[in-house]
Length: 261
Image (tube, rainbow, N blue to C red):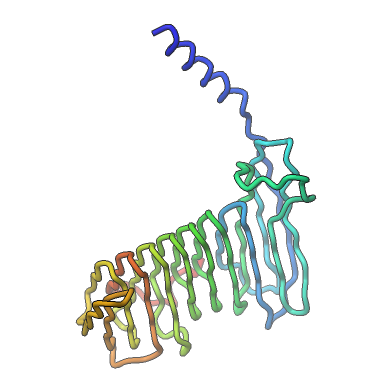
């Protein structure tokens, strides 16, 4: 009993000594009207919101630093032609790179209308709401949440979950949402028009009528198709082993009356 008590005290004391050094910085960066906003954050989350009509991106970077012996994380910003590139990286390369560091920088970006956005993380999450432009997302283990995106959506997550509410009539381009092992939950409005293709070896759940083909010796082993609202741009969803849900939602108010942010 004494040993257990002493061990518990030591654990609490060690935790108390680990003090997070927190800081926040705000940057304003120009972006061309035909440009992309490209964000790579291997050390934290990315949140994107609607940023108005001026040709600039507001970036809020919140750093949590616990390991002062490791090189500091910084936010690199670079203008390449019309594009704006943003990357979270170590200030200088250590002699022995640490792949399990606990320091992090989370990014919040306010992106103006009409810009294409490309987002990449490793383990951390991506959440986008109100973006008025095309969106591409890549992550390995992070979860992805999308809402009120008025543009084409293309997502690939190796092992994370993807939840998206897709807007109707905002793009004539095909849209693709994919995860290797994660679940997909995609919701469309009742006035949506799509040619839908679903592939998975997991469970398919839907509010729509599907034609399902079983392919015994393939992975994914189930391939489903549906025509929604008379058909339109292709919407494809694929997960080798995750559950795929395609749901329907009613519109209770017009898009014009809704705040995009």
